[in-house]
Image (tube, rainbow, N blue to C red):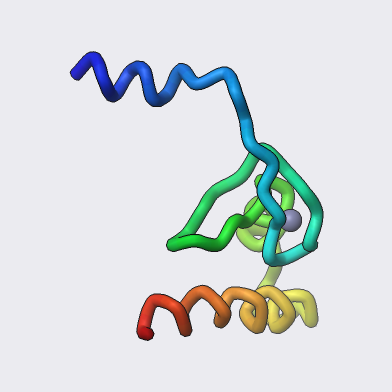
Length: 70
Ligand SMILES: [Zn+2]
């Protein structure tokens, strides 16, 4: 129980390269070994399926799914 709390209390935030926008960000999520920054994650949720941007996101996300199925 105590170990879980310590992990969430980490002060150091490593910068990761977002696979969507390619920028270095510290806030975001990591799926498998790929990082998606908070901004892109938020935008993906908001983007409509009919939007051209959605295709772009899906294209980028496919990199992750390929790794998952490898
Ligand atoms: Zn991003």
